[in-house]
Length: 177
Image 1 (cartoon, one colour):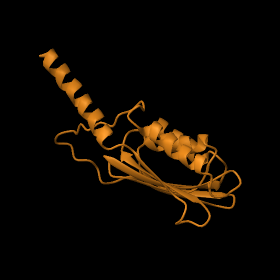
Image 2 (cartoon, helix red, strand yellow; image 1 turned 135 degrees about the horizontal axis):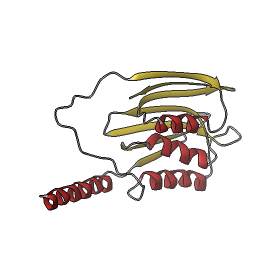
Image 3 (cartoon, rainbow, N blue to C red; image 1 turned 30 degrees about the vertical axis):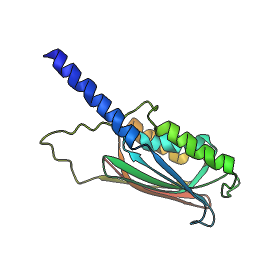
């Protein structure tokens, strides 16, 4: 019996890897729709800690997130980030734009350390209520990354969020579960 269960788990894990390869993360850079920032669209299969991964990649590339829209339906997520360089300007260098796409894809791709689970609990109804968190304060580089790390450490899943900055102020409204 244990052999049958182990075989079922292995095939389920292989199925998850197959789904990941069939639906790789999609990263689109848009330098046309916003006059003062480069817009980075990221969508993929959802997994625990994925928001933190994307924000850390953008932070590691020394980009400043001026606005973010985060959305998730449980199995999939779509995040949109308005980013600038350290001087507050759009990213126009093609090499830098390609690096953004490559690093995010590598972080979220099949080689990343987490594969999203497709297993569902039978007979358990998910709650439609989320906890809303409102944050305001002084903006600084890495703030969204730190907030994401804290929420990840508390095992909170960000379902929806709007984040924005103006001058030296930052604000966010996040729905977590």
